[in-house]
Image 1: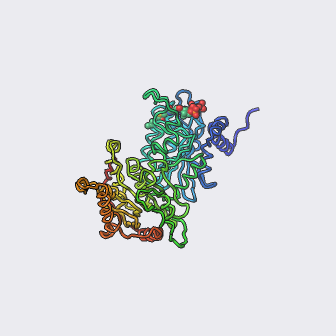
Image 2: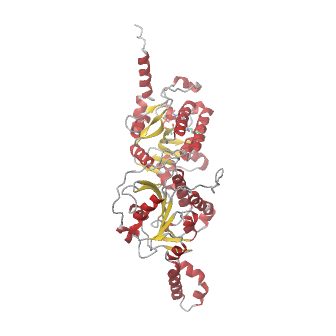
Amino acid sequence: MADTPQTPMERLENLRVEALKGGGEARIEAQHAKGKLTARERITLLLDPGSFEEIGMLVKHRSTNFGLDKQQFLGDGVVTGYGRVDGRPVYVFSQDFTVLGGSLAEAHAEKICRIMDLAMQNGAPVIGLNDSGGARIQEGVVSLGGYADIFYRNVQASGVIPQLSGILGPCAGGAVYSPALTDFIFMAEGSSYMFVTGPNVVKTVTHEEVTSEELGGAKAHAAKSGVTHFTAANEALVIAQMKRVLSYLPSNCEELPPALPYAAADEARPALDGLIPQNAQQPYDIRDAIEGTVDAGSFCEVQRDYAENIVCGFARLAGRSIGIVANQPAFLAGVLDIKASNKAARFVRTCDAFNVPLLVFEDVPGFLPGTDQEWNGIISNGAKLLYAFSEATVPRITVITRKAYGGAYDVMNSAHIGADLVYAWPTAEIAVMGAKGAAEIIFRKEIAASTDPAATLAAKEAEYAELFAHPYNAAARGYVSEVIAPAQTRQKLIRAFEMLQNKAAKLPKKKHGNLPL
Ligand code: HXC
């Protein structure tokens, strides 16, 4: 007996059912067995319940190469559409590894580009959930062209709308460059990796034996390369992190970040008065200053395991989003080096692009000396941070907790490069260098000629400290707006950022600046 013809509604329903199956049950099981979710399960976790609207569910590839015409999967390996996160609109693409390994080719790339174009036209973030074997080998150059179409859009969208990349599987070859062009990368530990060339190519070219995990796993990119900004133990936690980061950002560069309701309370924080050790050489954790100042539980650290001598992250102050950059005396004495400068410069520019005011906690002994730093370019890399602060037009406030020495004093959001307000704690030391080093240089001859060089050095060190190891010369010049008790910091900052909320600073007309890359 002949099959009963499908009604139009049945035909549509059957196509939908087929599309929802992706690469089929067996491949979905294999995906789950690796501890990975499917493209659609990830979207369900990301978006507000019931808010997803799919675009391009029935798209198919047009290739006949190498039998591809017999391997048709509706949607072509990527689920695209729009929805809401915490009630705010977002655009999303989620690669489906069960379909041809999530590989990217012509139609797949067109779907992603469509989403990116809509996001740009409508001023809302793009969230990419990447899980792909890279360029679809059978489709050849159109796959490469598809990647380049995406890269171009990533760059056009940069600084206009937030772009977040979740890495939830392999991400090899050209596939790493789209995430690298976005604002934030999030990796799942143990099931995701990123590299330009995989272990086999590495072995052939450099004879190094390395696993995928060692070469480009979440831990490697969190601690060694700094490529990823966030990592989490599983995909659900990665997606939760992505939603949290979005909550600090506006939908586009024309808007302000969303503010949470805030009820004024007693803002004094007496615990901060005891934070700085008596001995200026003794470390303390700058996170205690940050967490003691911002709204409880609001600090969200970025690149936590990379360049730990500088701490960067989002937080809220009286419900409003701020970006924090803080020297970390508990790691390498908080010195500025190449990695720390790059990390902080990137974060400052991200905050400035998206109207997130900047708060700096400063305790820095200077730039790290040595051939390694000089030959690898501490000059041009340190200059990036100087450049980033100097061009930032968002409200900017610095709190000097202890050392503000040398060039690092200038770089760390000083009044001279445009900080709106600079507060100093009474423990602040604002000088060209520490008292001992200064005494050794300027009293070298006297110390050498002395009958008791150690005692002479100690006396000269005390003399220099008395003159410079405090904030009052800088305050007398107006470089420091006010010397405040640490306990007052939160109250002062809440009022100051409120005072600055309508700040309208403009850069001189130019095509674009020339950051020392
Ligand atoms: C087509 C691909 C594919 C690809 C995987 N598949 N990668 N199909 N093009 N690039 C298919 C496999 O044939 C397989 O199909 C299915 O996806 C799952 O792949 P497996 O190998 O079984 O999975 P797994 O063992 O988990 O390994 C995943 C993988 C591996 C590590 C990603 O598949 C792999 O190495 N793929 C090739 C990666 C690569 O070299 N890509 C090109 C990078 S160059 P079946 O039918 O069996 O399920 C590049 C250039 C871009 O991207 C440049 C832009 C500037």
